[in-house]
Image 1 (cartoon, rainbow, N blue to C red):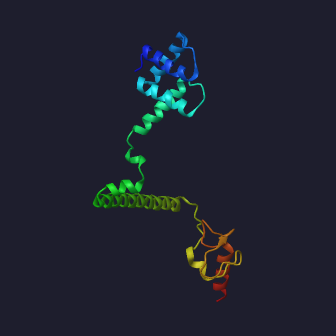
Image 2 (image 1 turned 30 degrees about the horizontal axis):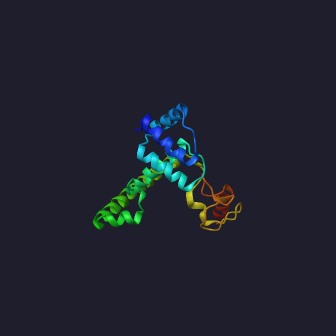
Image 3 (image 1 turned 180 degrees about the horizontal axis):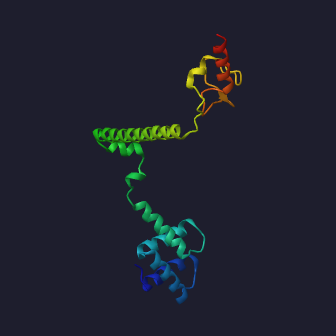
Length: 184
């Protein structure tokens, strides 16, 4: 952590570049910024020199903090998550990768099975709770062409291009079959 004496020295370094006149208020402001950002004297001194090596702006505590943080970030070793996936995979034992992939595949299979089971349960509930037409004779009327929607023999009737939900065929198709059978 930076001290008041060190801040005075930093202001002297900055004044050699920009001819500023250090004051108590300026020292206190820089000390507060340095304390909040946890500057060290060496980091801050280096940041001031680096700033004036590349920029002509009047340096402020925010510039010093930004340069110090950037340097600290560069010095930090990279975490495995920040490294490219290929590099991380190359570091691992191939058996471990296969094991991990196998575990992932097994987990996904378990999820798929649970979804399929739940889907079948939901379909069964829907079948049980739907308003089935008591006059519907199931697929028995499918051996007749539907005069209402034009469905061919063997195909279910449709409404607006979709299969009927509560009946297998239109009442007109069932009537056509009944009429045909009564004539025979």
